[in-house]
Length: 234
Image (cartoon, rainbow, N blue to C red; front, side):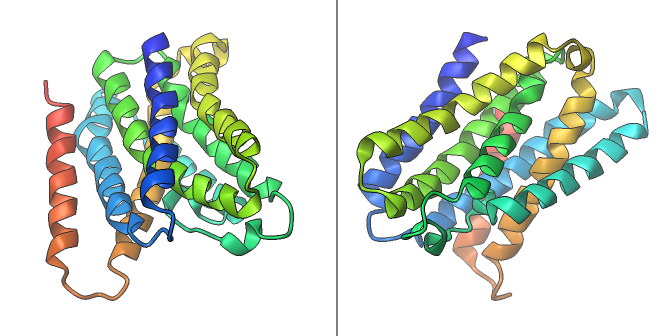
């Protein structure tokens, strides 16, 4: 399980590195990366998570998917949509750190990692892990960019990024140790798929907000879906 922790912390470190090296002038170029991550999350859910959780044909999983969808909707009322690419520089400029935004983002990171610590199949765990890694990279780029608007102190930026990075390992730990959760692996996966569904569809709808055909974006979406299919293939 420690390997999962290292991968997720490493994804945050990679996102911060990308933000430092390639996104000094803004985040417009993030749209393609976000489009890939949104399509990948959708592919992971549809190709692998949904078939697995519905093996038992229990309809209450549908309710949990909807619950996850609306919990994410509620979280975004506080995070202002940082999870799917909304950057709000004005919230971080000359006003102090917007704790509501940051803490809701951290709670999101904790919730989506809970099933990895549960008792579900290894393929499901690996699919969730890959989805979280791909999702965390662009989110970290955005968070890093926003924190740089708040302060130029690299130690403060590193501190908040470290806290963010530790949310996923904490979620895994809670999911594996909290008795009320350990025996409900499929339920947790359904709930997190609802979160993924909201994030992925929001990203993809916003990627095509002009309603014009864009062959590059279509190619990125198809590539992400193919990678998602191959990454969970038996």
